[in-house]
Length: 150
View 1 (cartoon, helix red, strand yellow):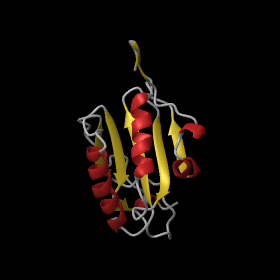
View 2 (cartoon, helix red, strand yellow):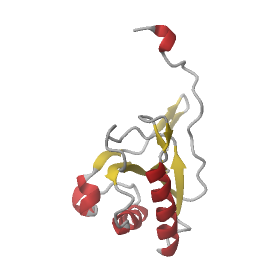
View 3 (cartoon, one colour):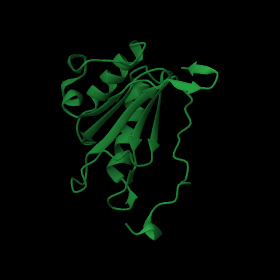
């Protein structure tokens, strides 16, 4: 491998500040095309509006983020969306078409907010999301020299 083309260890921060108990992340950068993701921006806008209209606006912040690395390179449209919260499992769904109804995304948000650890089974998820699950990641337990912190 040519080390001159390797990415340096220090990279730009891709963290997204969270101002609500739960966060929905919508990919808005296409690493395959090297440009912003117009479908992602469209989905981000629609999802923000739907979450606010559903009464979940105080529970969820809907943010655009850097590439979530879960899309198929030549699909061209479908998006990747993630849900996360402190001490909860993180969920990542792919192949979300911004032109389709987003009721299932709002419904998943409602379910996710109700479960204390974020751990839902496939049968609990709306079918479209169940079919498009990329990952369910257990909540992180941060371990320091002083002990575990959750």
